[in-house]
Every structure is written in C-alpha cells, then in structure tokens.
Image (cartoon, rainbow, N blue to C red; front, top):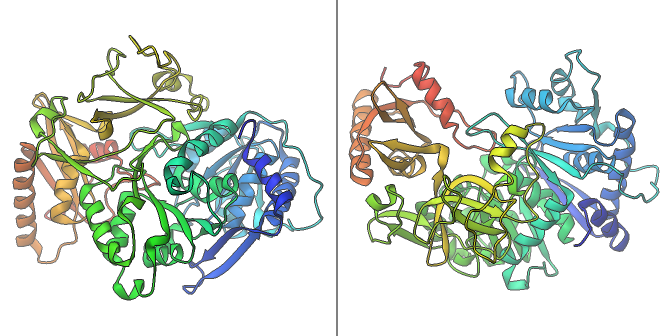
Amino acid sequence: MPNASILTVLRDRAGDTPDELAFTYTDYDRDPDGIVETLTWAQLYRRTLNMAEQAGQYGAPGDRALIIAPQGLPYIVAFLGAMQAGFIAVPLSAPVPGSHDERISAVVADTSPAVVLTTAALFDVAARYVDDGAAMTAVISVDTLDLDTPEPVPAEVSEGPDIAYLQYTSGSTRAPAGVMISHRNLVANFDQLMPDYLRRYGGVFPEGGALVSWLPFYHDMGLMLGVAAPILAGTPADLMSPLAFLTHPPRWLQTMARHRVVVSGGPNFALDLAARRTSDEDLAGLDLSVIDSIICGAERVQPPTVARFLDRFAPFGFRPEALMPSYGLAEATVFVASGGLGRVPEVVEFAVDELTQGTAIRRPGGTPLVRYGVAQSPLLLIVDAETGRPCPDGTVGEIWTHGENVSAGYWRKPDLTGTGFGATLVDRPADLPSTDWLRTGDRGFISDGDLFIVGRIKDMLIVRGRNHYSEDIEETVRGITRGRVAAIAVSDEHDEKLVTIIEFKKRDETQELAEVKSEVTAAISRAHGLQVADIVLVEPGTIPTTTSGKIRRSACVEQHRQGQFVRLDG
C-alpha cells in the first residue's frame, strides 16, 4: 500500500463499498445476552469526519488527543477522528471509577493533550486527569455527539504530523513511554504480518472472512487486530470487550465459529483460560476449522499452554497449525515474527546448564521452548549486546530487528530513544543494513533456522554467575500452584538471591502452605539447579501487573524489599 494511511484506506472503503459491514461490537457488559451494535464503512467514515470537525475546534495539527474510553465503537471513532483532525492520537485504558490510574496521569504529563475524547459514563472520571489548571484541555463525550448528520464532504487527510499515534508501552520494566507510530509504520507492519496469518489465502482475506477480537484497543496487538487490520484489509471485525471474554471465555470460541475464515489473537494466559473454562456444552455444534490463525503474543508462549489448548479444541475441528506463537513489541508497531509458515507449533528442549551459559544445545529433558518462525520482513538478527556483532546460530544474544515498521523512537525521550533505536551493527554481513536497527531488550537465539526466545534482558537473574530467566522459573512454579508467579532476584550485601512471589488460594491453612513451599523448592532445584531464598505466598490479585497483564517484576522487587507483601503464612 504505497503512500497509503489508515485514513486514506478508510475513505476508499467508504467510497467503494459504503453499505458493507465494517465493525460489529457486542456489548456483554450491559447485558449478558449481548447488545449488538454495527457500523458500515460509510457510517464509520461519516462519523470519523464529523468527529474530526468537532475535535479540531480545540487544537491544531500536531496536538495530542487522548482517548480515555471503554471498549466499543465510540473508541474506534474517537481514535480515527483524532487522526483525521491532524492530532496525534493517544489510545489509553478506561480508568476504574473511584481509583487513581498513575499510568494515565503519567501520560497526561508526558503529552500535554489539547483534547480528551471519552464517553458520557466516564466524562467526570476522565476530566479529573486533566483538570489541574496547568493548561486548557477540552473533554468531549463522543457518544453524546450527533456524528451521523450532516452528511460530510469527503475530505483529504489533514496536513498533520507523520506521527499517527503514541503507543504507550506497558511499563513492565520502566515507566510508560510513548512509542511514536507513523502512518507508514502501521501500514508496513500490516503488510508484513498478513502473509503469515493468512498463508492459505495468499495473505488476503477471502469472502466471508472476519477478524475477531476482545483485546483492548489501547494495547498494540488489540489496536492492530481490532481497529487497524479490519480497515486495511477491508474485512469486517467482530468485537467484544476484554471483560466479556474474561467472565465467559466460551464467547470467544463461539464468536469465531460464526464466520467462514477467521483471524484472532490473545496472550498465553487467554489460551490457558479458554482451554480450562470452556465445556463440551459450550462447544456443541461449533466448527472451529474456520479459524485460520490465532495469534498468540504479548507474552512468551508456554509449552504446557500450547499442548492444553490443542488437546482441548482439536476434537471440534481446530487445526494445530492455526495456533501461531508470535513475537513482537510496540517499538516495532506490533509484529516481528510468528510461528506460522504452515507448521504445527513445536516445543524443543535445550540443555539446561549450557543454556544458562548462553549456548543452545538441543537435548531431551532440557528447558522446553516454543519455536518461532523468522519472517522475510522485518529483518531479525541475534546480536551480542556488548559488541554489536551478530551471534552465530546456537548462541544466546539480544534480538535486533530492522524494517519500515520500526518506530522513530519515544515521544519526548531522546535519551531513552538512543538506548534502543538506531543501533549500528558491527561486522555486518554484506546483505544486511548497518544502521537503524532496533534493540528489543529481549534475549533469544536461532536454532535450525528458527527463533527461540528466552526472556527479557532486564528480567534475567544472575545467581552464582549463571544466567536464569524469570519466565522459565515462573512456569515451573505455575505447574504446581496454577496461579500467577513472579520470580525475582533480590540482592543483599553478598549476592543475588532467588525469591518467588506466588499467588495462592489457600484451602487447608498452614499444612497446605508448608506443602506448597516444599514442592516449589524441590521443583526449582530439580529443573533449574537453584535454591530459593524466600517463597512468598500471597492472595490472588496481589502481584503488580501492567495494563496488559505482564508482571511488573521491578515493582515486586521493591515491595519485597520494603516488606509490603501480606504473606498468607504470616
């Protein structure tokens, strides 16, 4: 799509197929049976233009427009209308009434918005975040405006900045930072991911295809799947809220089964939740063979989850190759690599001791890791983080990527931008560019042409001179407790020691807690050769997480240091 943007494509869809369905949103939060709302391409374009006219009265091209609204069609209209007005859109989550969201406050301070687009139900809550007297910020309830009349005049895209929106990172290892996503980044990444996720159809949705999503629009994968991809592909989206999925996971499977060819997605925990909480009765009469791809990303995919999901849904027609472990990050818009290429998800085991020393050797009984394919675009390379030189296959290093999907950096944070963006490759192969590489901060390696991910560099634990990865230890513990786990390193004056924070629903009081601690200690010793300095059992919901559900391990370290966790065993 040369020189295209999501706005120019939307304009063309409205002109070419005005009456075709664009978005369906089923609201299960207000009614458990679902309240269905729809928009055609013409309706969506009309509302986008009228939204731009309303919002444009309160700022100039290049100003920031925050979207602080619940999941729904008004959110999509607000996002598109803000960009149509020439603003830089900033998609955010809806704060919980009665609580204060520090992340939203941080984003308000970072962006100095001209306008906040919200809904009537959240107007007062959203207004409090910008009502500090420091600047005049307009607050608009999108759902109270008459955006269907008058009939707008087809408009060119406003001469605003190249930046389409700011995608604020989840903040799992640092304060949230706004990734500057350009219109070109968005379209390029869409073009890169389509061949992987619709491989059977040549990267193009056939008639009867649909995108199904419950992922939050403020998350990079949710924004692509639920808002951008439907417009860029010209394919209808069937949407619901995250809460609708969490309270009744079968809705996700039932929604996908309504269509002929489906692409959807969700993080590892969602696959696990769907497999555990969907009954045969929920699946009665469903044909899951219509699912072409389920993109599993946002967090590292765990081998037991893959096995559980495939075992649960294969009897109902789900094809194993349709489950696609995927890797990406907001700094690259969203997509970098997937486990597709028409292959069934594969788990490979690597020698434990060698892996902790940075060498990957395939060995049965070792650390299990899920295979990810390497896409033709964007480029992906494993690099020695200290020297900037490419690593040979089988050597653990930092994952670097390069392509038109890679952002220019972080909003108003040149120092932070310089640590990850624009990296230079030393002693590069002749067929690879030398500059403008993105350092992802993730560690991985290539084995037999495939990518394997071992964890975040900042989440790496160095205990007695050996490298261990938080996610590996957490998965070992989850096999015992089934709940959320944080594996962290806590330093004393001599060494770093392993501490595990475990959410656990106690049943038989002290005796059971003691048994769990004993099992966890033994399992970590067997699987990782580590001793646990402290096991902290806490109530479910205690471990701090980001808005996308990732564990905030740095916050766990600080809370443990300050003795702030309330232990179930005293």
